[in-house]
Length: 73
Image (cartoon, rainbow, N blue to C red; front, side, top):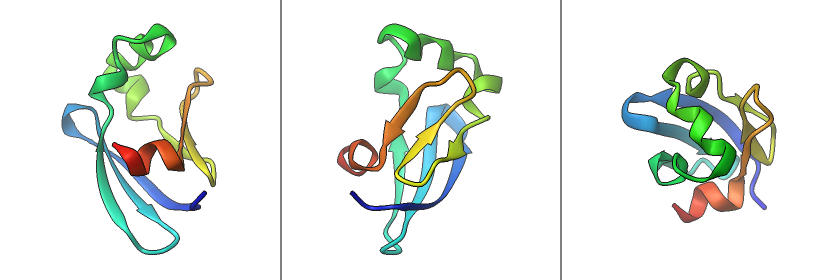
């Protein structure tokens, strides 16, 4: 797994993620918004509260996505 350096929420349910290897990627999270608890992230205010957790990003409602998942989307 690659560690995440920074994460920034963007418009249209996208995240700008910079990984420790300096790879920068815009990740479209919208594909997850109709799956189980991820539906809660349709609330843009909640979506914008994303935090870097090292090897994943996470939201206050205990949802997370791993760096591996982010690299693959």
